[in-house]
Image (cartoon, rainbow, N blue to C red):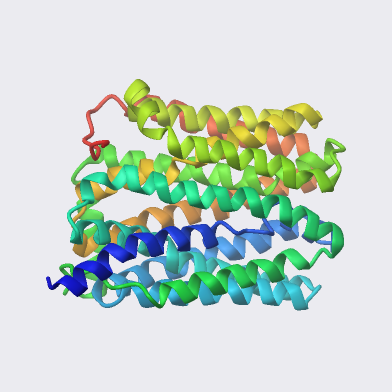
Length: 397
């Protein structure tokens, strides 16, 4: 590797920090479910809209990651950013269920293109400059930028919504445009590219996971856990509104929540050294159960406390699952294998969002949250049963 290539690859890390910052500028985060409800969209229709989002992620995730493993991860990251911009533009110019559905499908496709590819690109950038052993430490730094941006955009998003309900979508589109602009300047890391045919690539990715049954089971359970988290985060807005918390305060509440997400990312290594990876998985599931019950009460203080709990757990999601996958999967199949995990997560999200949305529409918000808590409890009991085996995870620096 010549000096220029080495310099450019080291520059990838600083560019990824900036991309993480703009990725966190999610001005719609505190309000998008309320926006849909205020436009006359029912919970069942929200289930369909979000279901379309998850379905498109499910469809596009593996093909895009196979292409990324075989050809260019940078191109896939740029394409994913375009999908996110189109989503926000479509919502900004429309008020119909059909256009909202199309917009969130585009977001699902965009997120699918970015999900596994970004993590694989990041790890290979570290690998190319000999810093792969610092994966958890540097990823924690990236997440600090991400959550710092979320703190800012949460406050700004609620304020913008108060001025004009569509402004948060326009501002998020500009943030996504900045993300793409930086991605153009990334240097593709040198790596062993897959020469397998597409179906063989999927099969080989599964083989890497199935060689360690506990890793496979953990990834399945983690995917369900993340799906429950997603539904709870989506419905945190109607939960707070039902608790009679004014929308103008949502930005502050989510900003405080994102501070806890930042803490979750920052202190992950210390937490893991105290309670190990099994304890962390149990903690994730317990938070899902507690938050479901808190939201169901529709008591303001419990709804407010739930946001920091949710974001604290999500702060270390990527570090937790990435350290497991990167330890057992080679570079040539890393994006594909991460996408297999993402596909499971999206499939479970598609199922759960519709089950819980249907429960709310047919009965009450409380029943929907009790269903969520019951699912999380079942998953916890299953995990306790299967987690007796040993599993190797990447070392913490």
